[in-house]
Image (cartoon, rainbow over all chains, first blue to last red; front, side, top):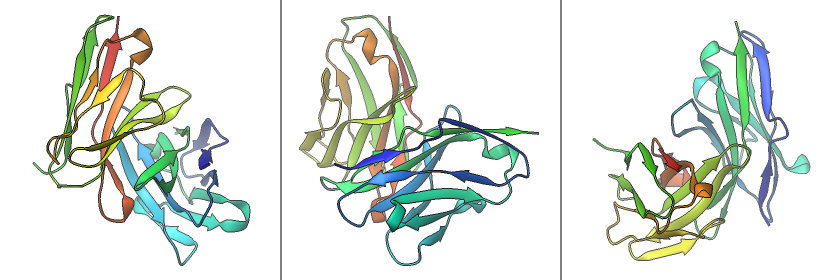
Length: 113
Length: 111
């Protein structure tokens, strides 16, 4: 069965520091992978996605993610975090039963000034 | 305005009452979804719909009913609300390349 793990519930980084959020998945075939961001009181917004091809994908707001098939991982990175990046981040894998995706439990990012 | 909207944004109701949460999208997307978001659980799928008049259960469907008579609307009904259904509810639809577009959410409190 498909599943997603985000090992870090909460991460705190200083503004300007680099960031890596971890995502591990279980899926029976080559997955489609997504990262979404949720600001407080808002819905989720797509950051980036991976379907095939280049394993390093670029997204909005300076984020990138790397697909590593051998490690079943899709970690999200940003070289220099801004205070506005404080939010909750969700990894998702699928599809199954048509267009369904499984979401991870989320990682909350706090940014110190 | 184009997009996906949910109403109401906030709702307080009593145990045992019926509550309907509305979801409307303007893109004519085929797939629509209802999720609930609870601390420690992330997003859990309640129901989804592949097209008008086609719906199916997700991970946590008990106590909920959906319908989809029109492509653009996907209401979620709590037939007899319970305190365990206190949550934030998100509606979403799927565009090109499986990207999900989320509504702003409805915060439901059952007292």
